[in-house]
Amino acid sequence: MNLSHSNEVSKVKVKYEKLYPGQFPNEVIATLIGIKGKFTVILPSSLVDKSTQSITAFVVNQEGDKYLVDLPTYTITSGSKVWFGKKSILEGVR
Image 1 (cartoon, rainbow, N blue to C red):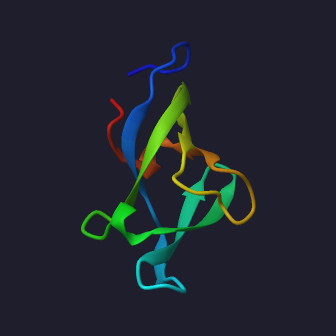
Image 2 (image 1 turned 90 degrees about the vertical axis):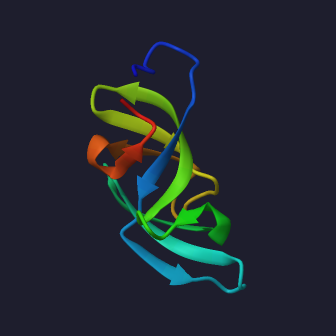
């Protein structure tokens, strides 16, 4: 799938590096590794798949093997959109 010149959005699973319990029972803190380094997000535990160590998100743009992913919440250090390499995307992108 090539999203670089379209308005397509693709639901994907993005691998997380580490997962921690959040302040509340239904939230978690996840560390993700994007192209520019590590990012931390606090999100509902319902968006986490522990069996694949991934979270649900959406690819909104693509440049070669790089994917701009719209995460379900803002990261601690930036907004909700983060560039990831193909290795971090588990499914939804061909």
